[in-house]
Image 1: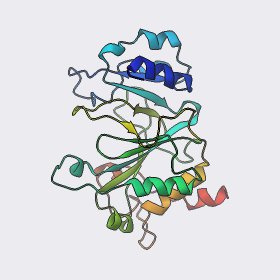
Image 2: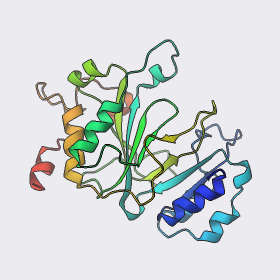
Image 3: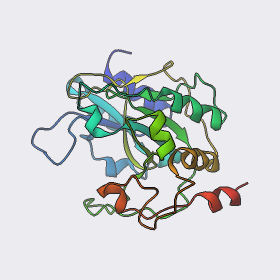
Image 4: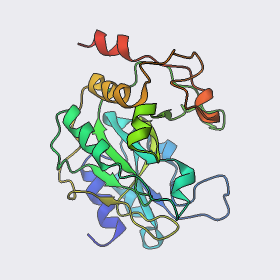
Length: 252
């Protein structure tokens, strides 16, 4: 597939509601190579029509994305700290072993096709799973009262192995950029293994939570009510501590 319209039809046939991206320099509040041009709100709770997709300006598009949350479509975002992504002199840690460990932990094959490498050497793992069993804060900047994206920072032991690793983001709703989109440096999002031919696999939520618990919680530290561990920044201080243990045990 060479044209974005072909990718749009392909993703739509797999059950996705598709977004269309043309960078708008007139909107400094958005990440212009990630923000949908079409109104995502109109297709969040209903099935997108084929004629809607055909109406978008794909000839000038730089990207394509999907609405998360519908039909239990979710993504795990494994990424580096922002300060390292913008520092060309800093060698980024290879995060692929974390991806492979996730696949093993949730009983998926190593060549699972829904693994996307981002332009900044992070990864998106696209799956289907249930909604989060805990409260997520509302984003005060959202005119629609949408939830914030839940992020978890790595534990001390994890950081020893992966020094540039920044966080797991649990992308349970909102929006996700898909291949073959590009960023502002014209670097593509790409599939690590092969282009998927069927919808993402459904994974038990307890397995996902157990994996996050393994990489992010400092078991030997006192749990702080203000955060997950001692590696907190301004974003994470606004999120209460979540102990997954009772949730995982309840589902066993």
